[in-house]
Amino acid sequence: MSADPETAAEPLDGWHRRHGASWRDDGGLRLVAGYGDPASELALLGRSCGLAERRWIEAFDVTGEDRGRFLNGYVTCDVAALEPGAGAPGFFTDVKGGILADAVITACAAGLRVAVPAGRARALIAHLGRYVLADRVELAAREDLRQLLVAGPGAGELVAQLAPEEPGPWSLRAATVAGRPVEIQRQRDLGAPVYVLWASAADAAVVADELTTRGAEPVGFDALESLRILAGVARYGVDFDDSRFPQETGLDDAVSYTKGCYLGQEVVARIHYRGHVNHALRGLRGAGATLPPSGAALEYEGQEVGRLGSVTRSPATGEAVGLAILHRKAAAIGTEVAVAGSSPGREAPLRVEEPGFALAAAGG
Image 1 (cartoon, rainbow, N blue to C red):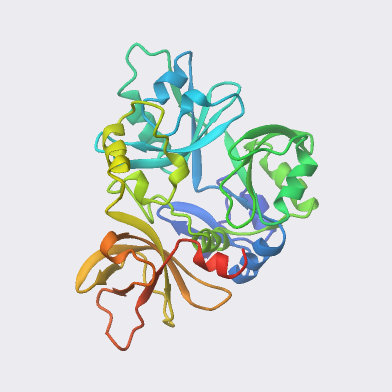
Image 2 (cartoon, one colour):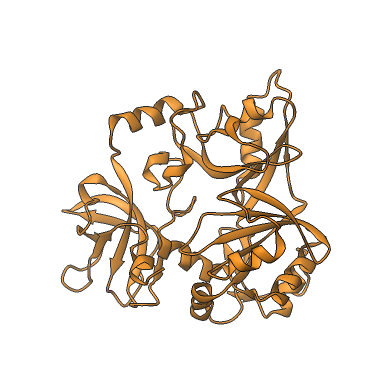
């Protein structure tokens, strides 16, 4: 972690500095690690309402008369079924069914907004652009938008103060915060409600100030990552990549099996109707004093069965908590896997659990 640089490169950097932010590099992406003690911020997310700038997600728009029909041919969710203001999680897949990115696609007034992991928007614009022939479609990165995330048991109450109608799952609602227009969108719950407020870059700091006035407290990426891992939600680039199929990620609501054809659909459908996958997302728990490193190979009966993805420590028990996509021969709950290179009898194995077991055990 590092201190904020003297010259602010982003509209909210000054706001973060005033709140005492420390920074980290996450694969080339500059993020706020936290504002003090990550454990305290994680505890805050369990009892009230945390506020963060969501830089790890970026967006692009798909506009034009053919936007719905066009995009529906490249994602696993049913874009054609989206009513105005509705959204859906999905995956972009390649011709072999491998995951190019996970996404949330929302039907906005001007077109379709596609939210994807940071660093993927331009690659996906280029990917989709290769298929634009006679389609009346335009693709454009939304670098003018900033995202403020509110999460925790108090997030719903805060949003109720701002929006005349609370957003349903993945849906978008227009609102005004401190006189500035925003769009509020419900996200995937992490043991408690999570919302994102989309605002212009020029308005983001004013909106953030108003949210803190209304009781939200700044939290960093580290605390939110711990919450995500405890909740058992996989992350692109850490827990899965283009070598994985959608059904292996645990994000079951991101695939429609009734929508019809899209790039990679034949492979994804074949896996589904076969009735099982060869690999599945699992939680892991370990009693070791040292957290095993993300990316470490995992072994069962002397064979590699997967790699450790996200990893954190449970604030309730002190145990290591991780996520991994494991081969089915090691995916049964209660199975014990070893970190490759560990010493049997000296380093505790990792026990396979359901994703989200740690949050469920803590009453989240």
